[in-house]
Image (tube, rainbow, N blue to C red):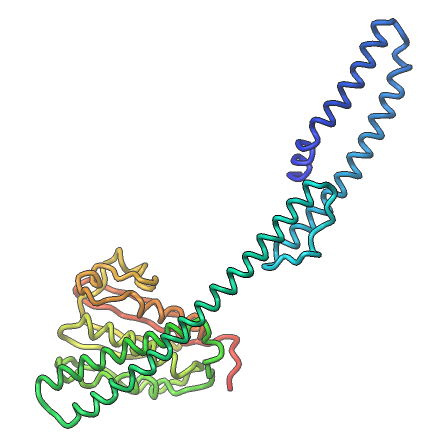
Length: 329
């Protein structure tokens, strides 16, 4: 119906002109007192032919419209896909469209090349920066002082940020980097806990963790990164008290802290890219990337992540580890 109204609007001047000519004939015959049947019959015949002509023309227009709608679904418009031009003006428009498509393809190729160069550069940088970090960690292993412990803690944070950069770079190309199979959840959680053992001891925070006795279908490396990020945030915003790690049914890993909590107005947005919230703005060190990466990784793995929090009482992060429609290896 919308196409019909648009077509009639486009052809309105032709229709009005034909009706005006018929009206002129009727008026002239009436003024000369001639029989109106002599003009009504040919006028009706002409009207019928005009309607048939409009119907045939509308059918052609509708077919071209359908063809153009199909073309619009493709990202690339090939030269031979557009309908045949029926006028010089239509041909001009099609030439303009082809030129714009060629310019778009060229620009897309240039942007993709620049993007890949940037990805390659930062990937190489992230791997290279790991070498001096590892060297400094080895040198600090032979020292045991307050300064060496602080430097080791800072190096650990730097190492985390470098790993975050690598995960961010691999995120969009993660399909080639996943090894989905069955893993022991305890093995993954223990790896994350061991990395933060020094911080737990140094800050005298209590870890409430008992064996989870659960297996999950996931990717070990990517899920480990998510658990580490959640633990890192829990430690960052917990000055005293404890951090608990436990499971809920069905297959939900929970990490709860007794930290400063999250403001109610910030809670719905903590998984958005770049959003830091009130605590992040006051901390001045938050990037708003960690939880965003966790959400994206969980989506790619078929998991879920959610948060509950009460200000000044603590936060609980839930990782739903049920896996659906995944081929295991």
